[in-house]
Amino acid sequence: MAIVKPFRGIRPPRELVEQVECRPYDVLDSEEARAEAGDNEKSLYHIIKPEIDFAPGTSEYDPRVYEKAAENFRKFKEKGWLVQDTHEHYYIYAQTMQGKTQYGLVVGALVDDYMQGRIKKHELTRRDKEEDRMKHVRVNNANIEPVFFAYPDNEVLNALIMRYAQTAPEYDFVAPIDGFRHQFWVISDEQDMQTITDEFAKMPTMYIADGHHRSAAAALVGAEKQQQNPNHTGKEEYNYFMAVCFQASQLTILDYNRVVKDLNGFTSEEFLAALQVNFIVEDKGTELYKPRELHEFALYLDGRWYSLKAKEGTYDNSDPIGVLDVDISSRLILDELLGIKDLRSDKRIDFVGGLRGLGELKRRVDSGEMRMALALYPVSMKQIMDIADSGKIMPPKATWFEPKLRSGLVIHALE
Image (tube, rainbow, N blue to C red; front, side, top):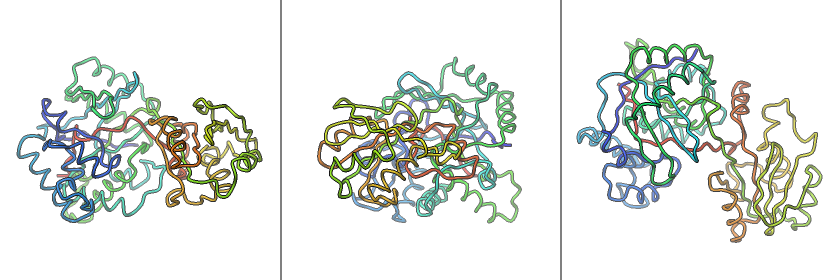
């Protein structure tokens, strides 16, 4: 069963939300955050990217930077830019991208559910990235940014959410960078809150969609606090961390594409010939070409697009990993032909999120920066859930969720 609870959110007054809210910490670098914050002292970047308050070039891991985050968090509360709700609530957070809206429930998720594997992951995490976010949670004694979960579709919760969606939201704005609409409702009704708690309790599991490092950090800090408290009861707020939970069928996963600097000694003709061992290769001309189905790839090389369809026997549909196009392309193209063994560390490869489109792949190759591009068919949420259920881990750089959660709409205090 998935245990969730409402919490007393810390959030901006309605008239300030557009000055406070921002993109999440891990989708932009320090200088981009500095530019976006500009002279806006209310921007949450001063809490989640506080290196912008120091000289350019200051490391985001400098101990002074974490201290500045806590100082700024206190300042935001003192000035009334962030105010804690007087009662516990659940919240609804809706995002609209290209005419499609997805609705998430903002909840306190149980630390022990993560530690015991009832909140399932599909990616490996790096200890250094976990430690960075753990320091941020510790110094602020709060989950400043939410994590992004998926749950199996639930008719009762969907009906409840749709009922609120017909009412006026607490926040409603179009973000300046992504151009997507973001709406936010506060659930105050005791019966509705109990319904949410009860419906989640019927679920055997939830799934991390995006934000594996934030999930790990939030849960590990909660577990630390349990160990450090000799009077621990299990009812303390630190036993929970903030998550936005979406119905799995509503989520949009975009393609996560690859660009490579060289052909590992092959000429273009030799490379295309080598591909024909495991793929049906078809020249599609100079117009942008997107893969149409699972196990089809689009290659951009020398100003032309090619369809690559994996031949029978090159993948295993009964294996949740072996069926993935990221696995097929990693094994049969990147590793076997191009000699790229480790997607996380090899400097010859880079990755382009699908929101940037095929045009970005073409641009980077045409500029001479990259030699070739490979576009993949998007992973499905079912594939992600199957992998998480099997206890296996997806290959690196496999999923690109869009839209990203905005930060600053609500914060969860651990006390």
